[in-house]
Length: 152
Ligand code: SF4
Ligand code: SF4
Image (tube, rainbow, N blue to C red; front, side):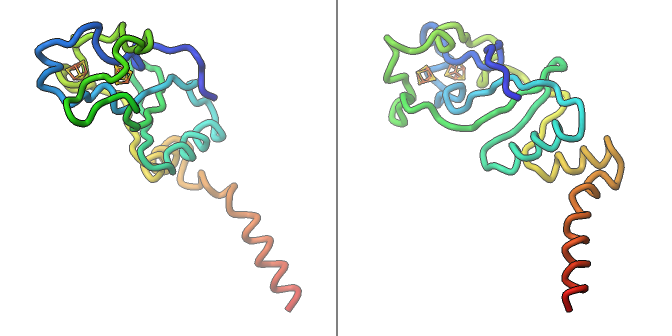
C-alpha cells in the first residue's frame, strides 16, 4: 500500500551546511518517511498495525496524508562530525531539503495522529470500529478448541 511518489515529508538535508546544521547531529538524516494510502477499511488499518509491530517504525498523519516513518540512520552520516560523507553525490531529495522548519529548527509537527506502536493502533481501531473489532481474528481459535474437545 506504499505509494512511490516522494513528498515534502521525505525531503532530507540541506543544499548547504547552515549555522543550524553545525549545531545539529544530523537529525534529518536519521529517518525517512514515505506516504502511504489513506486507510479505508479494517484490512487497511490492520496492515498499518502490522507495520507498527516492527521496532523503529511509526505512522503519522499530517495534513490528512498518512506516512510510514522509519527510524534508520543514513549510512553516509558521519557520527564524528555529523556531516554527509557522500555530499557530492547525495541524492536529489537531500539537496532540496532546507533548514526552514527542519527537524532541528521546526516547531512541534502538530501531527493529527501519531502511532508509535501496534497497541496504539489497536486502541484506535477499537474506537473506530467498536470493541468487537478483533473478533474476526478469534473464531478460528474457537473452532480449533471445539475440534480438540471432540477428539477427546
Ligand atoms: S535537522 Fe536541520 S539543522 Fe539538523 S542537519 Fe538537518 S537541516 Fe541541518
Ligand atoms: S546522503 Fe548525506 S545528506 Fe543525504 S541523508 Fe545521507 S547523510 Fe544525509
